[in-house]
Image (spheres, rainbow, N blue to C red):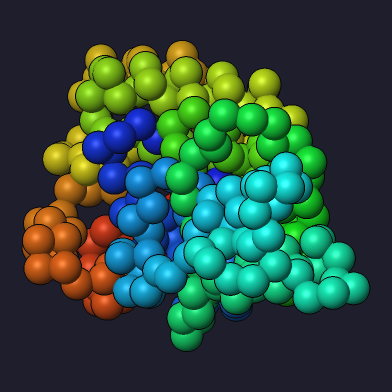
Length: 260
């Protein structure tokens, strides 16, 4: 059975950093992981140390153009489906070919947001294909943009855990509250939602703790601010190379251990 974990948060709170560490932890301890980068900024691959050759957005735009009859290719210049091959089968092939493969995890990148036009038929096909791919993994980790639009379009699969990331500021927690409210508007079911406060120095301030207590989802825990994360980012080293005894990794691993 596949467990789906979605990570969301406003820009600057370290959402993608935590998503990468979650992938690292699950890949090393729990089994094969499929990471899905659903943030249009598409930088999860750098933190995972994987090369990015194609995105689902590119493939989607090519398929939409083909459906409209304007071109006969999918993706970045590939020929269209061979004679007798259904578009759905060819889309399956293209997305599987775009998969970036790691040792303990693989990555699919959703890429650019949708342009003008109707994407309903294309997105329905994408859902079926990505769901089919996801079934081969024990865990799926989705790195979402704050609005989580990709989450409801990406899959028909329910989300088991929605982890909403905030920094230790009032603005961050208010933004997390708004993101948490969006889960009630999604086309998929979110079983459990939790808050993670990232980049914390010392203890939670009482005023912030009081604000967090008013949320309709609980605080899972905190991850301390760690200079090693900034060092990795500045040097361009992928976070999957972070030591297993580093503070941010062990802190996040302990939080995941309470829910998995």
